[in-house]
Image 1: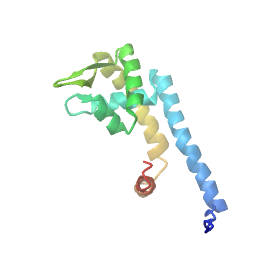
Image 2 (image 1 turned 90 degrees about the horizontal axis):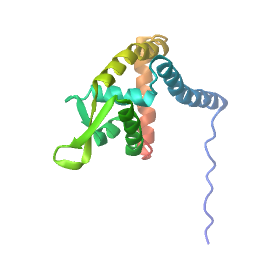
Image 3 (image 1 turned 180 degrees about the vertical axis):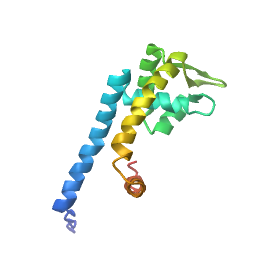
Image 4 (image 1 turned 60 degrees about the vertical axis):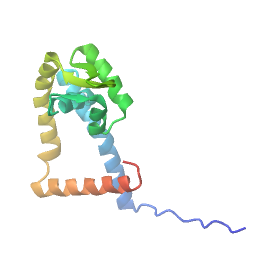
Length: 160
């Protein structure tokens, strides 16, 4: 019987570990900061805001729920849960898709447009002030490239 070769992991250097911990904290901290701002300013979660924004940007002013989930890269169950909650609040409406009894078309109600228009300025201000203003244009471009490389590495492994 041949013994399997044990490959020693490529451990992180001290600098890499420090950067990894910073990235990990950033990846969990940014959504929390966005949620706090949106909740305080407009009683929305960042997920609800993302749905309102995505539906508002849809070409026809409405979007199929499956396409919404795909566009946000979320599980359909997460989108469905949020849509139920948002429909109860009166900010979105769901109706059966024409020609397909299984699909649903999502659109914003008048209240949904009002909530989105009230929430957008504060949200965009936070994003601008926290993410873009501290960086030069060259740093913003580099950040985009770096994030794209990380996403591609995860996608290669089927994890994105």
